[in-house]
Length: 77
Image (cartoon, rainbow, N blue to C red):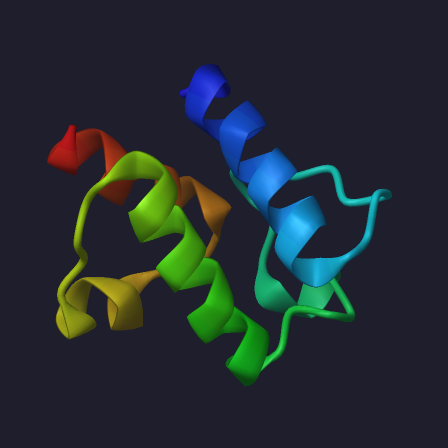
């Protein structure tokens, strides 16, 4: 999980243009000022491109925190 978390951390920093982001599995959108609904879409697109995977809408809607995003990535890899 830590490897995916590190990769997501880099993607979040890039997409949200905030070098201070430090993700944990418990991180939620309200923890990061820049993580709004529009940027969430950008994050999903970048995650899919980076890992060369596709998520379903229902998977994305189920995510409550970064740990659940990592779990979805692991299921697809």
